[in-house]
Length: 451
Image (cartoon, rainbow, N blue to C red; front, side, top):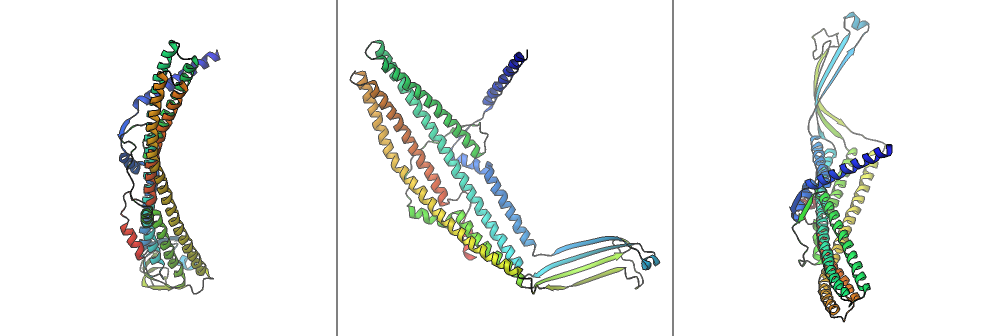
């Protein structure tokens, strides 16, 4: 009885899953997109980009905080106390309320505030560059995913052509086998070849579905969204030299510029650390109310000294003549941070140069392979046609036909792979060079040169 119930429950669950799956398929949205559409969606929806925007917003408020530290502050201090003793008991006083309002403003901090503001300003610029670098990375990732989907779609065409060609060949073999002109081994071999081609078609279709899901994930769409890609993999010659690409990258890559900014930030932090050796000057205005009632100071004889209504204004100076070498330690830490930032900047330059060279060489290799693969595909098509004619005339073998078909499929696949590698290498080179997405880097370059 329990077994029957379990079977019934299992059937219902499976039925429910199938119903949900069919409903989900029916509701799947189809979108016509080109590569520019995908990049724009990624800029708007990608979580990594949004996180980088949050970092930039945080830097904006950090700069605001640093700037506000240089202005006046208003402070209110209040206290309520229960008091006692002979003096207070004699005057029938058992409570004391004190309120002090003070306005203070730093006049001179030895460069501490100025250094903090400068560091915050530079950090904001560095975060803007980091945001641009993130966008460039997501753009390249989106382009790579788009090109991968296009390549997978082309591989489906190759697999479909292979199945169609082998089906036609199998009909020919069947006819000749029925007429008794070929052996059964030819028929079996052709059937096996067709089955393998059909399996390859299934695999190619799955690869395309995965590529589309990956593209959806990158651009921020539901992974089940069906995309109709409007572009085709093509070839546009690249006419910029390696030296030009490398020079552009050294001047414009956001991560290189950000690393240079971090050197300047570390130098500003040195000013902050050094300020401990200098005096601090503050201006303060204060008024205090104290008495038996909150926010009031009753007029009483002078001997009732617990009553207060006083104010003062003045300038205060503080100077740590000796702080047990704490400032010295901070200065040495800041100097070490500067050297570390310089090493990181050099590493960024070296990494940028390597990435440009690698992407450029990959692009060049892919460019050379396109023409070679195209010639090979044309010759493979010609070889297959000849093999078919020879087999139909009885002077060729079935093995010749299947071998020629396999080489044709491989040649077609290699051609589309070459186009894919060329376009994806071009996207990688754009990122390696630091081609801007939506940032005018000129002002940041000029500001870096002035600091």
